[in-house]
Image (cartoon, rainbow, N blue to C red):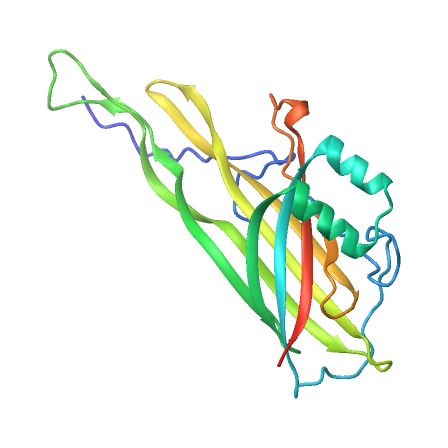
Length: 244
């Protein structure tokens, strides 16, 4: 038997709350917290004025990702706690999912903790086995092209000194996870497409040094068969300190 011509099988994806490919969009949540007010979720955003950060000082930021049960999260928000009290509540009742410490300056600082996930995107179609003819065997689809998706944690930060002496923080945080695969077709024409979930938060606001501040939420997308009683909300807390 002759070999079947090469016919690439392109794997496409549909984005909902999970991402199937490297460059697909994802849900972006941006909640600015006012560190000077009583409600850490009160939207308070401002843009830095044209004045450079004080490069004679050094700063670090501690980024903590907490996860809390949905009902507990709603209860905490209804209490209208201060930033300090909210942080204490999370430390006592939530689970710490991720921790990162970065140096902050007037230039963008990046930290990454990633793992490469390599997956096929094109396949050679199945063909008859011309070597072992009795009995006839079918060689299944064979991957011929691959892509790489970085999974794990990434954060970017930048601090700017304002004219009034306050500090403006820009923070981008992303968490990517491989949550499983979806199979298409039937044997021997079967291919698996990976599912990735992406959680992101962008924060641009004034911060107060040494005060834990809620930067936003970046909860995982809902799963199709998710148990709602186990739904958890992720809170991103940032604490900027001057390095002596």
